Length: 260
Ligand code: NAD
Image 1 (tube, rainbow, N blue to C red):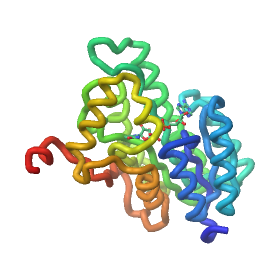
Image 2 (spheres, helix red, strand yellow):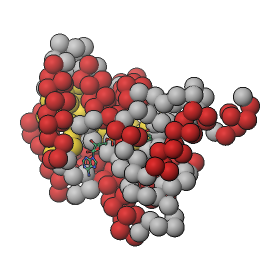
Image 3 (cartoon, rainbow, N blue to C red):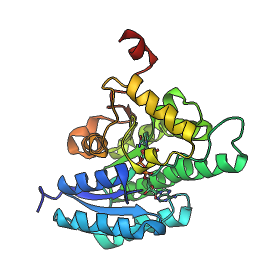
């Protein structure tokens, strides 16, 4: 058994990468964890569920598409019914989308990325907030942003715009009186299947070149590095942190290269 019981969490996009690392970290920190992903990731998600159980915590697998209103509402309802409430929502899902050049991105590509990254996160925030306000015991809402959203990024026209939309300070202002904090984490380059699966060779080369030259530490982070930051945002100690975009990852800029 891990540390004392801390509450009930949902982590979306938890079959792999950063989401999986967050689910396992929260389980080790004392949360019961409901892990979400799409049905195509069933085997991986069931393994993560078992890993949460192995940490001595209750777990649920939730197969739902976060871009679908009824799926997200159903996911929160199921967690409340089967685990007894909701204290932490980690809206972690994000997709890079295809191509990403302003010259060739179609309106359909744009809509797909926005449906999953932006509407998906809004729906997770909304249904988590509805539940947390009704419970009246506060809560933590945490979402995956990206520095690509803050700074822009070549060949990511839809992804960077979708992530920029996610800072959501307005929700933090609305929910503060309910003792619900709302924060986002902005991973720098992190070793996950998303990074390895960037759709075009040009995107991969550009990203890897940027990692080696323009991060302060000169290398990508691991999913566990991001999970540690999220674990803090989910903790009681973080009650005075809200409306923030939290960037922990030594992400530099071209100036770093020039100074070296
Ligand atoms: P990943 O691609 O490895 O994992 C994302 C998971 O989300 C996958 O398991 C996928 O099946 C799931 N998913 C996709 N669409 C879904 C949907 N509609 N409903 C439910 N699940 C869905 O990603 P990652 O690298 O672990 O990234 C996690 C988050 O961090 C994302 O929001 C990403 O944009 C952000 N991020 C990652 C990096 C990085 O370098 N890896 C950098 C900046 C931001």
